Image 1 (cartoon, rainbow, N blue to C red):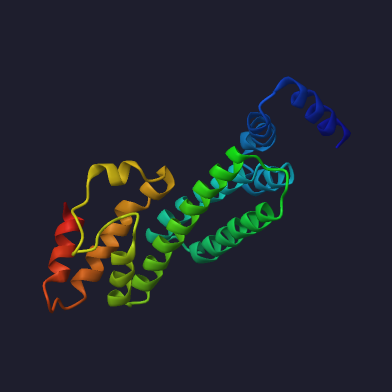
Image 2 (cartoon, rainbow, N blue to C red):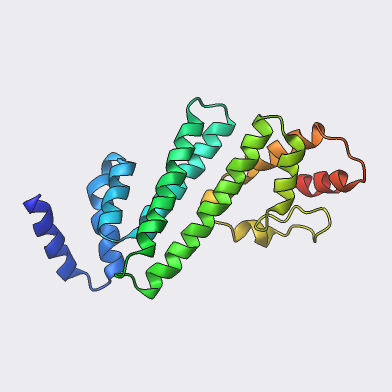
Length: 199
């Protein structure tokens, strides 16, 4: 532990940029061995909340993709990751040692976390056979405008999404099509939704 503190102090004097210093310190110890949760714990302790939350978002994105492909144990994993993400946000809220840059980054990652939560919720509804409810949630997605009454999707919409959210979009669209196949279209809105999904 004394060695880590010594290295911690030496690195800190070498890097005037606090964010860069925190990133190097947090990543160097654990990423080599892919110890995700240990890395997150260190990131939280040194106040690198946005980095910790991005790590959680990356893992959550991967877990959602794995869950949609039928991996067992995925639901408990995603629940744990969301809990960890919310815990990071709670710690950040009561932290006084944060600059403007870190606040902007944490808000960006908070948005990503909430978007991934919405995607996960849609998958859960679909898996439970609640296809109509799942479609209602799909239409509500502000970051992925699939509302049949709204404007057509542009390429920019996808490009502006976080890579972690982008990774989940193909499976989300497939699930949307499955839901559409299992719901009766009474007013052509679902047909319009299908058209948007297939663009």
